Length: 112
Length: 110
Image 1 (cartoon, each protein chain N blue to C red):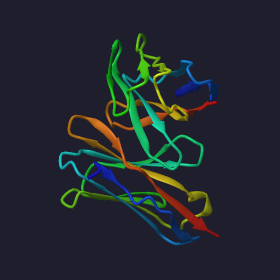
Image 2 (cartoon, helix red, strand yellow):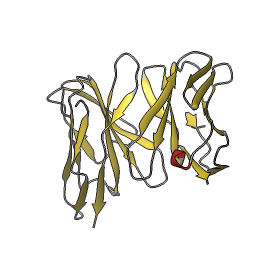
Image 3 (cartoon, rainbow over the protein chains, first blue to last red):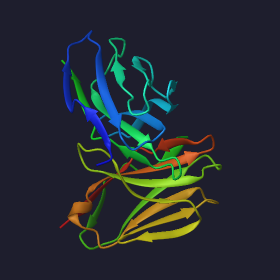
């Protein structure tokens, strides 16, 4: 079935460690996005990529990094520079014609 | 002023009633408008989208768009407890960027 797969679903990290969240899609979408969601809050854009080998910072990119070497894959690294990384992270890809986003199931990161 | 604004709620309605969720946006060049539903701890899922002024109906859901007033709403008829969730409004503004509102939490009481 077509969709977006995020892994891991739950992740615990010690302070000072980098972690990488995986996002893979088989929908053949060009554009992919990473959002962060804190409890009771809306979605905030971290990074997005419109095409392979290109990506742009969103509203809260500090402390995060991404790569887009393949159309299907858009991993997000949460670095030790991110001061408050505990959050729910959502990856999405976008339908070109309609603009709607399809979301993965999310990755919940907790810093101990 | 936030680009996309929603009342955070909670909006509480009795089962069987009509729930009315509202969203305003600041960019007059906005083209497309989306409503997503998000259950607690889950990812958002698309309910419907609307591009043109007026109403668009899909089952128990009706989206209403008024570009002159920069206002989009979602009506849920015959609300069920399973409709209890957070509803996110999203807007594609000029420049093709998609922006989300903060969401409205809906509670449908049996």
